[in-house]
Length: 291
Length: 114
Image 1 (tube, rainbow over the protein chains, first blue to last red):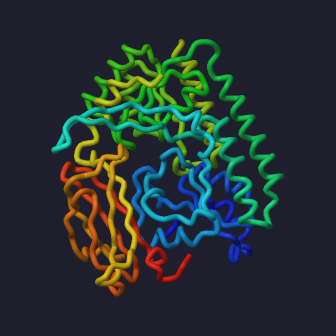
Image 2 (cartoon, rainbow over the protein chains, first blue to last red; image 1 turned 180 degrees about the vertical axis):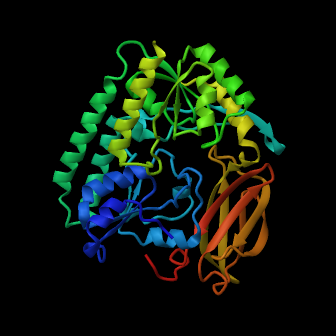
């Protein structure tokens, strides 16, 4: 079953929960934007079940049937959700908020390897977490607005868009103040922060650690080597790590911050609050690193 | 600038068995002389056609209904509308370990819906 995730919005107007247009979003940021633009006039659902990554989730047929029946399907685009290319979505009721960002997408690493009869070959693509550049996030919200206005005629989309863009602009300005001068090297626990780094002066080196796990000795050795190579003094976690993981990284002399990548809902607060909290945590870590 | 080499090595080292590759798959229903057929087409994002593989067909409950050979990026099989009432999940696995799928819902099969 599709999970209704914007609980605060739904709880705010339980009496109006029925007979409202249903909006299904493939990832949390665009669900948040849709919720802000629709207000109480629509029910916004996240397609991906709790705890699943939009990038790797494979829906069942029943889930696709529900998604196909939505009044509006909102996609992040930029290759985030593989499943959106694995079933027929109703074109007239689907909006790709990444359309128009093509010139700003960041190419990801190319990995060349060999297996089977095919021989050596490569995989490449583009980074998917576009919303972590809040300027791109604003453009995604703007791309969503016309389709949402058509699907939810009862919503004050114009006014809500102005308020959302104002909030995103304020956050963008705050993040712009994070780094003054040359890009600062940081290491991130997962390869999700390409747009964040490019937008806000961070020279990002990515690990790909399992979420919630304590890094083993080899991983810590690789982290130490990467820190020495890049000069990074800060490790950014995607989510709050186990205490043992924090202690192990601290033993390497690295400051640490948690900046949620937000493809899924944050543990606390909403998109804007999580971005602000991540900024505050990263500012503190960067300050610790220079002491 | 994202550091590439170490991250790529780590990704490969950590991914393990989950490092299955995907192939683009599309399936549709077409009329044939012997009745309706499901036509499956598979292609890599590079445009290359997988020479060999298999097509696994499951119903809405995840029960495997049949497995067919994939040859030159294509397969076709008769549509059993009773078995496909809840839709069909079609998975292609190529002989070089790439995988992709397509979901045919009842609406896609012309059974009504959206």
